[in-house]
Length: 305
Image (tube, rainbow, N blue to C red; front, side, top):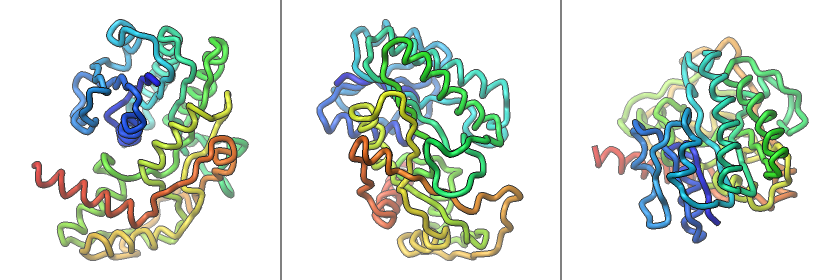
């Protein structure tokens, strides 16, 4: 397989590239020219890093220079903070997603796999499935939902298989510093006190390598036009995850030191039954093992300055 990966320096994308290389595939990794995370991409003769801004993604056709089999689309601007509610930025992402489908067509790709988000649902009851009503509460969620629908229509019109994975809480090597996992682990590893809400909410965490495998299986075995919700499929009290982080990293925790957010989601869990039935996906890495791997990565990052 020859695969194109946009947003290639992001956590799941990097994990996917590692998986693709291990399976003997060739990868064209598209990154922003100013990306500070390009070093996260595995170094291999099978990986070709191409600097291409997502706003000009169609120019990558000449840089790649050959037909490919699948395009995995992770690139997205404004994923954190106030930018998630910037309508202009988020709407540009919709167009960039459609441009990525156009690139897939130019490269004769057979499959387009896009990274959606739990934000497409807003607050919902019960396990999340493709059929759960979507009521996004911010511009980021609205744009992800629109991008999934419009890219599906465009891909199918081109005869390209389209699969959209709505990603829940993924953590691991290459995670962003502002996430609850990395920010908490850094405090704990430094011997500081990490403060939390009462942490009673039920949450679903998935390690990045498992998420990467789901994307790979979606491209090779997923149903055309399918929407899959991606998580571990099991929800546990956030308190339990926090206690495992403390057990692995040391430090101190203080539950109940912070109030819940006004719009706190108290239950978040993926129903992965359709994904498993169609592709055989089953998470392999338990939370404790995933946290140990994440801690080892953070230690390596610290030692390298």
